[in-house]
Picture 1 (tube, rainbow, N blue to C red):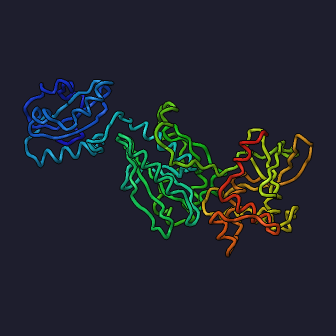
Picture 2: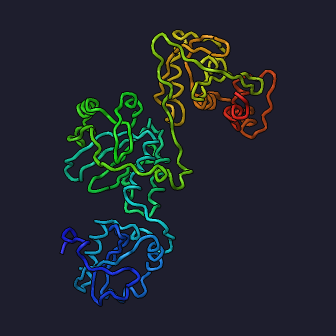
Length: 442
């Protein structure tokens, strides 16, 4: 009998604590809770004997304190080969969580597959993963949702994604992510992942230059988790102009409705677990462009770092920025660069793209009018997020020789003839400007 012919609700069963009432027969058995979630599947030639000393009994007994656990069984031939094949079919079909954990693991809580799915999708959304599209009629695969995460050349966040998905896989859940391919280290070691939920496959892959599509993206959901998503017209252009896409994603279309409709789970469940190793990334500017003719109102605070004056701009939401004039002065000693002659926007874009991560790639640099409330001063400038400003200085300033060695060893002491770029670079090796703001009244 094939696994798809089985209706678990029609099988005979006994409560876990009544296991001595099990019959003496060869069987495939299913351990379930009162809601019908399957925790474990096994096979045996003698059911009652198997459960006299079952290696999972104490583990299941702990779970039984919160919900009544039952043992269902399907009587079978005692042919070991047939039993083994059926057991494998059922495990592959239902993916019971305890079949994927060691007995010694103290399983105190089973994570439902829908919870694990939403938790993993929430983590991926934090890494600016986008919905590429949905292929409902793939030739050799089940209906597939394609997700893509941003990389730029050999830079990307594949390691953080790998850590996040491995943390999800540690949960006692039937939902598991598999890294089915990995690019060589010389190419960035980017990972390709997949998981399955309710006969739908979810594929996750790197996408070089994805940041350039984010600004024009739609907002769509998968399992009630929000993502940026490609538009149909963008997909059509890619499929038409890139042979590889046209060959592999011929039936791909943009997502309009959630292909996995699901009730949003409690936010406390989404945020639970040990995610200390997961780094949230916010590469996009949170300040929307001001309407034409209007100025952005900000406050400012002046910090002093080893004799270097640093002006910090603070918006109404408490976000910190630095005007591009300060970056230019520290780097090249020019306080008022000409926007056109010095190619300010172009040079800032190049500097951001040279950073070792893609965190700031695609940032929207723009000139805008800023008014400082406290003294009614009006200026035109480009705002750099404070952390970007620090990243740029640490990456663009290049001390050399003995000076670099002193800074790296923590032996550097500033001299009168040292430039402000060297002084602030040395200071930033062990400090952050945000620490000064946190201890100063704004």
